[in-house]
Amino acid sequence: MMNNLEKKPANFGSLIGVAPGNVNIYSSDYESVDDHEMPDRSSFRSLLDGMVMGYKWQCVEFARRWLYLNKGYIFEDVPMAYDIFRLRRVHVIADGTELPLYSFKNGSRRFPEPGCLLIWDEGGEFERTGHVAIVTEVSHRSIRLVEQNFDNLTWQDGQAFSREIKAKVTEDGEYWIQCPFDDAVLLGWVIQTDDGTFAEEIVEVDQRLFNLSMKEAAAQGRQGISWLNMANEDEAAYVKAMGGHRLASRDEDRFKYFGLSTSALQEIRRASNELHALFMRATDHILRHDSLLERFNIPVPVWPRIRQSWNNRRNQMITGRLDFSISDRGVKVYEYNADSASCYLESGKIQGKWAAHHGVHDGTDPGAGLVGALVTAWKKSEVRGVLHIMQDMEPEETYHALFMKSILERAGIPCKIIHGVSGLSWDRKGVVIDADGLEIKWVWKTWAWETALDQIRAEIEEEDSTADSYAFDTVRDHPPRLVDVLLNKDVMVFEPLWTLIPSNKAILAIMWTMFPHHRYLLDTQFSLTDDLKRKGYAAKPIAGRCGCNISIVDRHNETVDETSGKFKDQDQIYQELWRLPTVGGYYAQVSTFMVAGSYAGSCVRVESSPVITKDSDVLPLRVLDDHEF
View 1: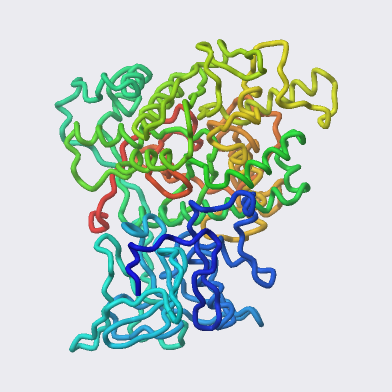
View 2: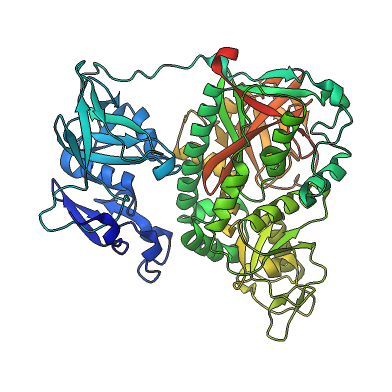
């Protein structure tokens, strides 16, 4: 074959080869995507006989399509390719039955065979997703495979496979496949078979490993010594907001930290990636049905813009935070803060520096990779020019904005911070400019999208006009408001407008109907059912924030806790009562941070009452080996 270094990737969607079984393989070179041919997100959905195979033209899409065409079955949708290694069944399309699936580690005595799946773990060559290929030929010295989304090179005439990899059979009868990349890990192969001999066992994790533990730093004699770098704007603003170099607001908690087992971290990481995929599937479903979108109390004039945002900017989400209860009862998600999520500085920088200062070296920092992930995401964001960071005047928003400013600068993106909207104006062309006369074209905000929607609602009500007559992109006779910036067609905003949907708690009730009894979801309804009354429930405003206006009612119909706020008049959802675990006298909630749709870090937030609010403390979190539990 010609040296691959001498060849260029084929354009996206080009036929690059035909796998055994007459299954086409296409280039997934996303840098060459033609925006006219692929104008929106729906263009990337791969459909076959009315079924979604995946996204064009990724490795998982090809594996599912090959199995469907050649075997008549497919495996379930997975958030990442490496998750295939944990699957234990495939679904037969013709009759809906299931067949067993077994996984065999590289080096197993059960040899791979044609038609099985070869699985790589995440990392290195395959970044966060891992990789899957179909095995076509097996010998004692090599193995051949077909795949998509690898090098995207067109096959030569007569070529019948994508790659050939060296293999070796040991004297003990073990089959080893050489991994061509030093920075990648080949997990093994997955076979549809009734014989599970030599297969990897899915060992049930001891549920006690999901319990958090509370510990205390030994180096308490260093109290009063500064340990955050006051030359860094974000850290200095954080110290000012907290009244000192500390994570805990209470003096008695300044040396306390939480421990999380490695198995628990693996589970919440898996849950985070899987749930993100489910939230995205639900968002797509909701935006296709007006009757569902009505549940979100979003002004009708905004609907087309949300749909346009979803179609065009599906992959431009930078940050998001999932909130979990994790204990020996299991792992359950409460909500997805996909729009203007907080606590990134605390997780990505402060908790690691706290541990270093206080001599806490057991375990690892689960936020250590957050900064790097954010820098990478912004480098891929396609921002061209100065990005304006728009924030309110809250101290927390100030240090959060400065933290993101430092990330943007590391990513090579020039940026300016705007406090509030005073100083904004219209130029002669009707363009929104800042106080220095610079056009606002790119925005990252700490404001919630709902704040802008409130301005639209108020304007419609004040002018006694119909929603259909509301006009966007209009130069007003007053200085630009938040809505005039964020919903301006010439301004690109992060997080995208479509994040209104997964952030709205109405999606939780719809997801329960789409994915009933899913292991990470809680029974959630738009109305209070007898079943929820028997279980106990939490009543939450659909677009509430910061733990405001939440009522927790137990199965005896007694109110356990209730918070106040400005969202009392909103529509509500009713979510099955699943209490946070109590550790060291505190209710503890684990939050996971998503960057560009993938897990990137964790922290723990605590409160003396059952509802976590914006004033709840973030205490340090460390990930410890299972044996320490």
